Image 1 (tube, rainbow, N blue to C red):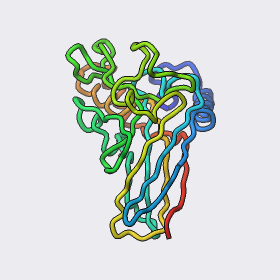
Image 2: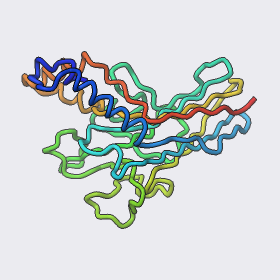
Image 3: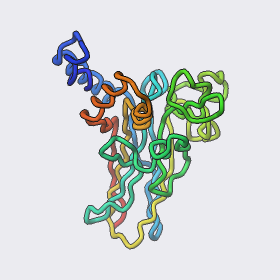
Image 4: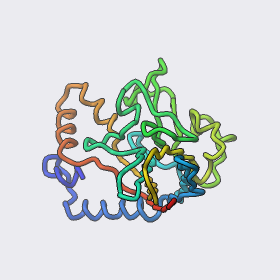
Length: 252
């Protein structure tokens, strides 16, 4: 979008029409041939709603792949009979940050991998988090010495227990029995309080090419290129792409 919108400033030789066409191809790949999401075993016991979310990938590489600014995550929303939001994990702010994501809130922290989410401040983010030689979180490629977290969704046939460390899973996802070749399964436990059903449960798999922390960290540096990029970034919405979505109703 930046290349299309500011192509003249950046001396881009492709036309805006060509770039718009490429955008549509990328969206078609993301939304039709990348991954699916499903709701499994939704139940209500008293004021507690439990739902398992299953993500299945259909690409032959980790997702997201490529440059580590890319990330995907699950947004889960529960609404009561009146449409009021009772619970939301993975919401997105106007500036493109993920509500509840530790890395977006603090450059020194990062969101862990979860097997169960029971708090709106917890988010399942599929990403690679780099660490420097001191084990500190960094978004500077030349300072990246290791992965502190790599729970990007794995392609079908990928055995996380036998692959080499240089391409393997890093962090808590390595011990998650429901995270493996082909996708992930995670449980959501939601406290409904006094809300009345039926309840609509929506799960989305979202994708962002440039995570908020990556763009925000650049602002700490001086330079013409940094200033230009930040100005472009601020003028182009960084809302995520919905890769896949599913909604189900539960309760009376």
